[in-house]
Length: 473
Image (spheres, one colour):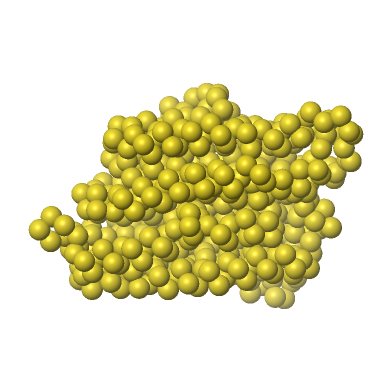
């Protein structure tokens, strides 16, 4: 690896080497708040370096790109990592987390998400994906005092190991069919007489199983509600936003390289998208636990994103990236509110706990309401334009039935997003006061709330930026 390659990977090196340093020094200095704040500083340093340090190469080792597209997502995931650590500052203290280990794991997850989004080969995709997946196995069960966390970690570990096997076999079959790991050559090599080679088709089938698990598509979603409920709230926010978002960020150039061969996958992709939108909606409706409701609703959102991915072209790609950002902001904000209410004996999750809470803690409950309404797609919040872009791209690409199903699912979703808001503000029984928020928690919630409102009122600049960094086919 040359000096130019190291220069190009500077943001990822800041995250990975910073995490390693914290892990090693933390063994001798078992503090908590200083390490978490150091992790926040390293995350924002990585984001700044990705934005201002221009690489002199376009690819590193034939595995990771350093294009504007890759750097954009490096900035995004680095900021997300920093905000997650900032949310974790009080939470880690209350639950007596080992500060150095926790901070290092979150930074490693940020580095893995960045590498996955920058993957320009199947090997890079595998390495980036497994980097943060292995970290999440630990983070999900990090609260050793709760049995439900250990159960969630075990479920994610077992099913994740199976999905990793499918991913490895799928990559192996695609390589055997095309003779290359590099995305453009590998996807082009799958073609024979205008059709996909049978071995390549089998490889893609296995790849879709692994992808379905990683992003919670029906029928590979069964781990999602238990893991969301059992994992610490800041970790759940990271899993729901960065882990899934990085997978879709990697799929955009992968599908762009596949070109017209995506038509052979459309039937399977359409089935996955429809099952996810319908199944997730039906499962979310009866929920009375906020984290489980957000888990099932995330399945629906992944169906929307898959629909945008199927639409293809600049419109579909732009819609997917914009949706990833606004979904991530609102979801991180929602789990940030849960984190801010968490106490040593657990997190408020059941709707009964939130009954009348809007009158006791109006600022945080108003922010939670805004995040839920954005996820529901209510204007003028950012989620409305996210859904509009997805459905517009689907209609332009003649996916009329899927667009109709998505629109109906979005209308029904208003019901299960409004229910917790009604519980917060429209109950006569006075609520029990929960813990007051901290300054750093309010800072994260303010950032998320402001972005949800700003991108709903003025999405133009972000859409223009996305148009400039779209990956070329």
